[in-house]
Amino acid sequence: MELKMEGIKAGYGDKMVVSDITFSAQAGKVTGIVGPNGVGKSTLLKCIAGLKKIQEGKILMDGQDLSAMERTERAKIQAYVPQKSEVSFPMTVEEFVLLGRKPYIQWSLKADDYKIVEENLHYLGIVPLREKYLDEISGGEYQKVMLARALVQEPQILLLDEPTSALDIRHQIEVMKILRKIASEKRCVVLLVMHDLSLIARFTDQALFMKNGKKEVFGDTAEVMSEQIVECVFGIRVKILQTEYGNVVIPMEDLVCITE
Image (cartoon, rainbow, N blue to C red; front, side):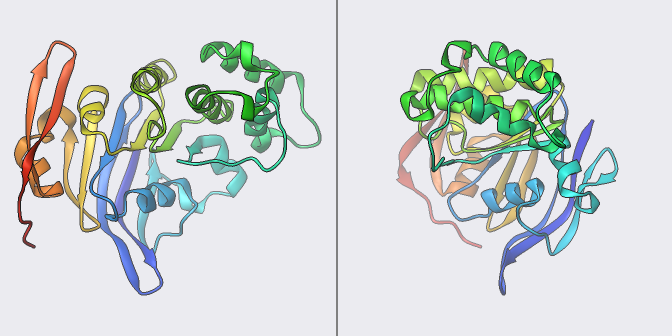
């Protein structure tokens, strides 16, 4: 399976935020979208999720135009995990995860809905949390619950906006390992926005570097993530060190002047 973006343009009012973005993400791989604040990463992700209307271009899944699909049918193909999600009333973990079955529910929940929820609670190791309320669990646990709600949609495309931003280092690694596992075992297209370059270097298969709302470079992470590209995109010199656990990106103290 392949998720393909062709010439995506989007913005707010007269301001164009994303321009001429073209790249492809494959099933079984984790693809990262990288760039400084304000370059349109989250806007692009929302366009792919169908939460933001594109002004030009196409979003295709194996040649099928997602923009032409009904909202409910699209929700059966893709799931979106936002950076922040607030629940305004008390809800248990199991109740929250069951919400992910909404695209499949006609009149009431069926045995299959509960079975799929049960399978994913086990898959993510959060069965002991099922009866806890959302405000009783930790940030790392909450992120797993968000993933469970997304996975019960049985998506072919999993979209995540900063999935590790509020987590400590242990839970960052744990979540990234889970995403690699999901991509590999469930044959999903996993596409995420992230700022941590070392996590991108270590856990993604492909990376899209964005600058000024446009694609600077896209390809296999090991090939496109270089000290020169990071300097060009972020305006800071770095050293990329190879270790037995993966590459580590170390920022230097001196900034560089980025010219257009």
